Image (tube, rainbow, N blue to C red; front, top):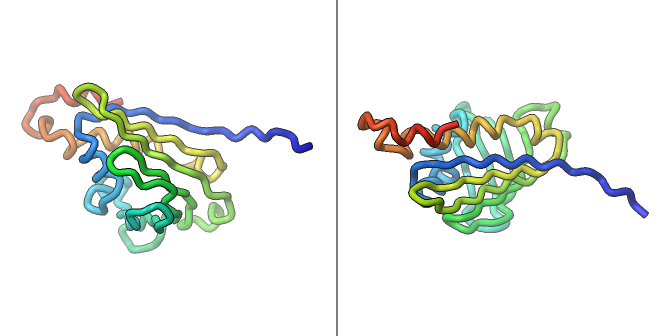
Amino acid sequence: MREATFVPKTVYITYIAATRERVWQALTTPEFTQQYFFGRSIEIEPRSGGNFVLRMSDGRDDVKGKVVEWSPPRRLSVTWRVDCNEAMRTLPECLVTYDIEQAGGAVKLTVERGASMGCARRPALRRTRRLAGDPLQPEERAGNRQGARHRT
């Protein structure tokens, strides 16, 4: 009989003053991911089983994986393997899932990251929190700072 193995999971929840469709765009289009994923642009085949790549601004692959679930605008799930760092290439891939739900006048974004040491070292928390910023909150550009209360 096999011993049960503890597999840690990290969950981040962020509230964003935007529509579910805008948050979906922020996660799945290169124009937005360059703003929220530290200059990385996404290349994603919009279907389960499709390829997923985050490219650095110089064109090198940073993260590679497969689309596990593609359910716009409510859920995106991808495998995640760090490719840019030689030492991290040998680590097992993990599963990253983005759930997008309406929460009153905001959107609740839940990012769940399955557990491998490689994934645990990635700065997903900062990426998720950056989604709460401009341009998804156009009222902030106009000088209304009310949307900023959703930032953490």
